[in-house]
Amino acid sequence: MRNQTDPYLDIQNRITDQIGALAEALPHRALAQIVRGVDDIRCLARDNGFAAVETLASRLESAVAGGGYRAAILTYLDAMSDAASVPRGPLSSAAQEAWLASVAVRLGH
Image 1 (tube, rainbow, N blue to C red):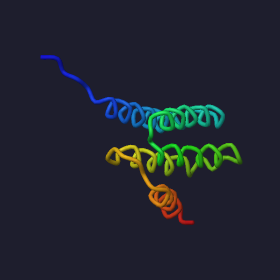
Image 2 (tube, one colour):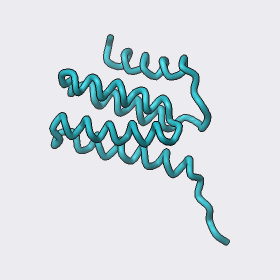
Image 3 (cartoon, rainbow, N blue to C red):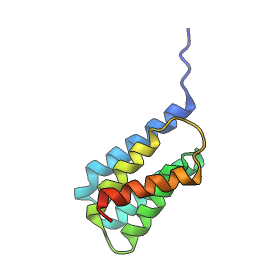
């Protein structure tokens, strides 16, 4: 009997694995490398329908490229990992905004 894998779960695992690897490597990465890693995650999320992850990654890219915010990176990565774990299906723009708001709360803004 052949075991078929769920493509959605495969992509979900790839996204969360990339987020985890980037989080672990943060102390050893330059900001430009972090931005490239986040961009890779954003593209993977965009191409596979993980809109909340894509939105968070886009905001993180802007924050990092615009002036660092190194302390906020882990907060964004945590939120991205949480967003990648939601059940399959499209998220409304309100749900995406809720993920962004959760980052703002975590950062105390």
